[in-house]
Image (cartoon, rainbow, N blue to C red; front, top):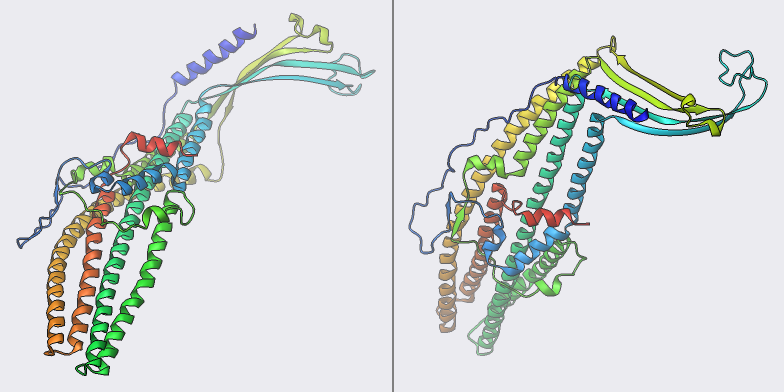
Length: 491
């Protein structure tokens, strides 16, 4: 009997569900204004050093490996696996999936069981006395059975809610991917800056040795009577000036090592031994595939997130519209009730109840209309946000391409400047020894050399940094399945 009643309830639920409709607009992916090809900056003058060229090939999914620096690649892999921000993003995905389960549960009947016992006594003057004792003595009441409740989703309120929850899952997944791209880009950025700082420190110390040699030479010439105290003071000032540049660079090196330690989930100083050795700044490949503008909408997580957010906002309109219509809830109970435990379960003690309940909003002071208008406005906002996100991504890639080519041209000019400054310093030192120029010329030329060398090192880093920014702007770095798997498994 119990099974047949439950089967009948479920059958009725299914019948109502099949005859229902889904209110609200269906989601459609909006169009985007992306062009067919990127605008390529032109290089007017011939170059002595070939530039890295961009092309329309497929964007590298693991772009960090193209820099040819195993230690940098290792740090990025460790950041993927251990970064705490990525762990938080993974938990947000888990939470959105759990929220979806709670919403989807409304699609199915809720079935419960109960078993109750009470010691009671009815009033002899009351309206009902289920014991039949006319309130003369106490009695036991045993009650057990099953109950079922289900809302017939006639207008698609539940279906739209599940659709919205699915879209919200995609929102958190795209947030996770966006965080992954950001963390990987930040790790590469800090590593390149670390190598730049170390190489500037190396150049500074080399110039310190040159300045110290010039000071010794000036003091010797003073002892020989061919130099003045002014020249010795100028040489001493140069040494002190170069010495003053070293502590900030050492501090910056320490800060960057700690930043990398944090990104890979380690304590301060954990990577000091590993990263203290000076190495060259990692350089990008000769060819840089950048894909096509139309592929941005499929690759960049922020665009995909904006699309999912628009999808959720669209589904929310259907939920709001369904609240204008009546709700039909089917409920039923089946069980046994007896005053003696020994009688419980016999056919004579069975009971059941089954029937629909209808609720219709008649007057709520305009609340449903206000909710609907709010949801429609949010959908329009989400649509505008999508268009803005696409346009901003397009600008970001265009700026990164322009910056990459501009930094390469600047790097070539600085190479020529350093070569000329090195020749000028040798010449100035020789002329000073010969007595044809004073020490001020040597001082001026060496300061110019140090400035140009430091600028060249930073320019080398800037070329690599803008390439990292370009890969980030293109949305590269999350497509590889092992990457997201590693992040999702992060405790």
